[in-house]
Amino acid sequence: MPARMKMSGVGSFSCQIVKRRWIKATNSFKVERKNLALHPMKKLILSVLIFSGILSSCSTDFEINAPYKETMVIYGLLNTLDTAQFIRISKAYLGEGNALIMAQQSDSINYADVLDVKMQRILNGTVIETFPLQRTDTIPKDSGVFASPYQVYYRTNHPIARDGSLYKLIATNSVTGTVATSTTRIVGDVTQDIPIAPNIDFVSRFFISVRYLPGDNSKVSDLVIRFHYTETDTQGVVTQKFVDWNFPEQSYLNSGSSDVEFKYFRPDFFEIIGNQIPHVPGVVRRIDNLAPGYLPIEFRFIVGSEDLYTYEQLTRPGTGVVQDRPLFTTVENGVGLFSSRLIHSEFRNLTANTISALDTSSFTRDLNFQ
View 1 (spheres, one colour):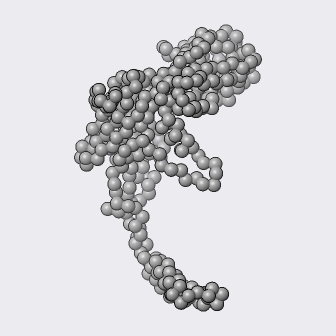
View 2 (view 1 turned 30 degrees about the horizontal axis):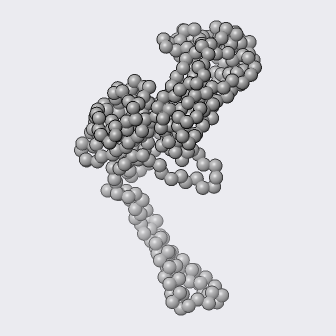
View 3 (view 1 turned 60 degrees about the vertical axis):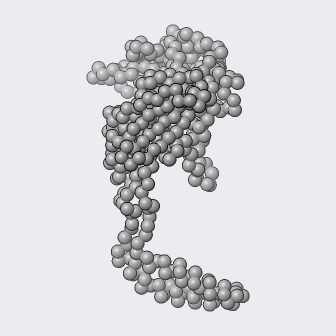
């Protein structure tokens, strides 16, 4: 049932002043008509329009929402290098009352266990395989606008092929019969033309370039240099943390045709981490006790599809007068983005002189790295 807004007591008062508004409006019209030289029929039409506009204030009920229509909201990015794929599927909601309060209710935005979600791998127009995605509601979520402390995702550990296959997501509501679908190409892996040195020097005062060839079906590339470290607080609790050094993304016309290059000034490393890590008395930081598989420096090569690039461009905050953006969706019979992104990581150690400089740099010497 569509929501309605009741204006008890206001409508009757508005109707009482209609006559006064009508008299005022027609008197104004009489004053001005000497200068308008209107045709009699035009005068009649104008009078009717004025009266109709005033009379509309007598209405006490307003339809502010259209009748409810089930709309699936789907977001997911397939990554061939991940061991698990997660797809967020929720629903648009409509109702009477405060929308922010409704957003705090899990059943306003999350489906119950009624969705049949599966994925098809399609090669040369033929469905090669179909596999299911399992509902999971145990992933923690920070408090905010939408319901917490958990969020609902649909997960699969099925490998994603890099042989040119398309992947089609199909979500079916077993109760209402509503079906939403979306299809994406898969972004290929990157190729490094010049391997990164095994030990990274951030002390030498000159620029260095990182270059790589983006994979197939990509439109945008990015680089993040991530610094991993651990913190031991005054209670002896050890927490693994990181700081990101982000670079401006680069877009291109033809993926796989030319390298992308990112340049950085090595000593900027110390300023980057010094600005992001707070000085906390008693906290000890280290880089030699990271979790297995981690080294202090991680180069993250990120490439995304054309759909992802378009979505990012249209959802960025506007800088001009016109702030409205067109709705971009890749989902049929729903809204959202189902596409592909790849994150390729390379881990490296720091050189001895870089480790020593953590204690001497004006940006990091107070951070108590040991």
